[in-house]
Length: 411
Image (cartoon, rainbow, N blue to C red; front, side, top):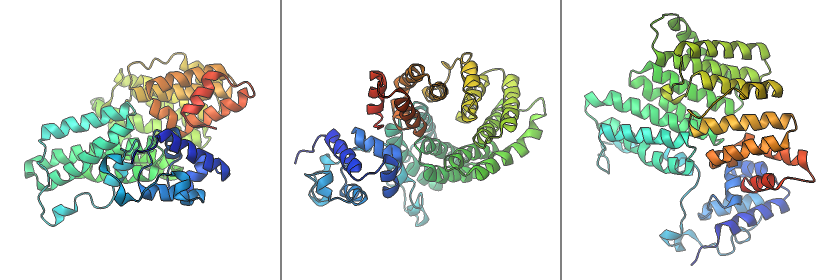
């Protein structure tokens, strides 16, 4: 059987959703999925091949499976090559499910040869490279293999290797947590961050514990659990701030303290606390000045540039579009990862949208899309600003904005 064009399936889902009077967020909620997943399906980025997913879509839309996909066949009749690879973090979610290495409790040896410590180091570094590039499909495949492997390895390794393996395990789960948060899957992000925290403590690496709390705080923010996010960040700051008074405080520790203050600045901005927002930014700015350079300790990308990126972001959250655009003029992000550059441009677009600058906002979004298309097509803030820009420019929506909306499946 020849699989139909994936885009046709996506278009059919979109038409059925419209007929049901549902928004993408409505369909996502009905299926227990993220809005970005629905967007990917409708754009043809995310294949829908498994019968269980087709059935879930049909149930949510109140139609039959064949309405969603006319040639759908029972799973047992499918040829292996007909099952397409996932293009989001589904594979990684599955890898996170259940006990990470149940066989080890029953003294089962690992099924595959165990990579060396050097191999694990390289694999973790590759995972962060993919995350910073917002290459989530490749990252999902990569971590879905890496996490079970390192979980088994740490339980069978010689005692002398276990501490480093726990540390690498913590870093791998931190990648997962950061990526789940960016892909609007905060429940999975929380699980990954919690596992990272436990692994970091077993590694005897207190700074890795703090880095895991940093990921956890972001997961809580995405869930709109601001009290818990604030508790995670404040607990770290309370311990680390007195240590930073020592002139010999290591730069890695200063980076984490600065990053946690940036977390607090965002929390306060979203809560509308203008004074506390600027206080936290000023503390972070002072720490960045003390470091004197952009760094990437614990993959936080903390430094003077990231502080100013957060100054732009928090200004947008507070509705100070003019301040955001003024600060943005002096921010140069070329030394940071594509993910950070694109996120900055997204905030610039949001500021322009607040000022009703449709052309400038669209240009910023297109520049961000060129850097990290997956992030811009699926980020909930990007989709919100695209909708706002369409409403602002109707009935004469610029062709470039229509194209961006189409690629992001925004209606």
